[in-house]
Image (cartoon, rainbow, N blue to C red; front, side, top):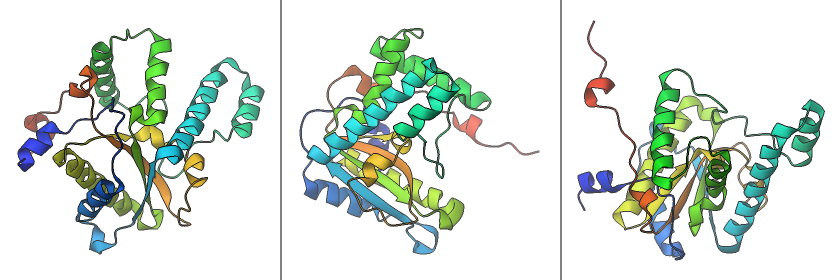
Length: 239
């Protein structure tokens, strides 16, 4: 495929086949991703690769944390604090995701994207049970047989996130070119403790994001494509 074809084909895949991805294939994707540019070639990131029983164990722990976090809504402040402490629900504090409402028109875009996705999934906006169920799928990787977590060194300031983002895009494009699918997931940034149980992440590196990886199914959700900005909206006009 040409670059244009790969770029157009890439989607956030939310339903994967029960088909293992060979370790050699993952290795090749990571090698291609490492061709990404970084600030002065510092490459300030580390990657965790989980498959098989390890991935299943991490998914079970993340799902448990998410389900417990949902129960906090029904507790008073003391109950919330006790439960959060007991189940280690404190979210990632360095490269944290936005909790709750997004600022300004970003929230409008977020809602528009969610409405389109829920329409494909057949979920009504006020059906909170199904919405929570769909959210839970993040934590068992939408059925993917593999997932990676990307950690970056915050000592490199904003360049760590810029470099990590470029690396992630290279990884996802490499996967698309080989017939695989990916889903970059901010939800996998929420809690790193389940990952740390299984991997010796170097001291000082902080969790940025996770990506599920596998072979896409024919599910309709996998063809959903949210509306992108036009070039006219993107480019800042002259004064």
